Amino acid sequence: MTTDESREAGRDAVVTPSRPTIVDVAEAAGVSRQTVSNALNRPHKVAPDTLERVLREIERLRFTPHVSAQQLRRQRASAYGFEVNPSGHRRLGHILDEFLVELTVSAPSHASHLVAFAPDPDDVIAGYRQTLASGLVDGFVLADTRHSDPRPPWLLEQHVPFVSFGRVWDLPELTRWVDVDGHAGVLQAVRHLAEAGYAQIGWLGWPAGSPVGDNRRQGWSDGLAELGVTGDAPTAEAVQDLDEATDAAARLLDRLGPDSAVVCASDLLALGVLRAVRNRGLEPGRDVGVVGFDDTDVAAAMQLTSVHQPVAEAARTAWDMLVDPTSTPGPVLLEPSLTVRASSVREPAAPTRADTRPTAKQARSDDDPPGIRP
Figure 1 (tube, rainbow, N blue to C red):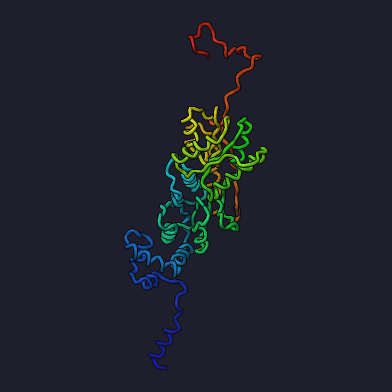
Figure 2 (cartoon, helix red, strand yellow; figure 1 turned 45 degrees about the vertical axis):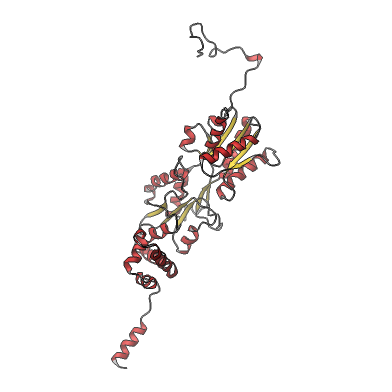
């Protein structure tokens, strides 16, 4: 064998790397290595059509997960990513804001920290892809799960650790989640309103198709069945918008009889009911019972009875699942509680003739100014 033949044989013996490199992506997309790097880490610097082409090749070649897996094997970041404000609710103390705070507070006790990143409105996976490619995180905490959610399947495909605050609705075999039992929380609300003496209990929820909303509505329906209520009870729907909730509540009140109450899928919807009640010159609690869900700061400020989610416990459980999955394998379904406030508390009934004599506290002394009673 000649020297040239030996060299040729040596080249043939070289094994092609099983994992694609940034060079492979660049060549496939017809761009430079720097453009590929920008597409992953600084997408705003890349022209839209070029960015689309590069990301398509990254997905086709399965480049990002392999690079990230190598980084994770070399060293752990002890950090997990969290998509800030995934549902777009920026007002009224949304429950995910509280969950983010509790995750941050609990992180040090789990020898970890949180890396927050913003969503890409045009590509649900983009933020996860870029954060993972940076090597800053070991995995992710998901929230705001829903049907047809592309994030869990993508993370599973990339073999990226994650835990979810909320059930992974389309993959019931997955157990790495912690959630709050919305069905049980609404059932508590219905029982409370029935015990308070409201004659009819309606429902204001989100449009059908939301797994969380549908689960909460089922709690209302089962609560009515428990009370022996048959047939269609009054309901209404609204998206998470205060004006729309107020309009929907007004329509619902038209269908409800006197001495009624409304259970809502969220505190924001319940605020719409409070507005509609007061627009009619009625008083929440005394005339119409109102119960929300989430027990936000706004609910406390408005004296709104609401289902309280144990968010701090959910955050601690999520960390336990991430850093020590064998000790907390999941799933974990937490029990909510009901925070009772004025919006669902009836005024005491007027005293009967037999007990109209004032007590010592009720009696006004001769020294009291007119119209003032201690």
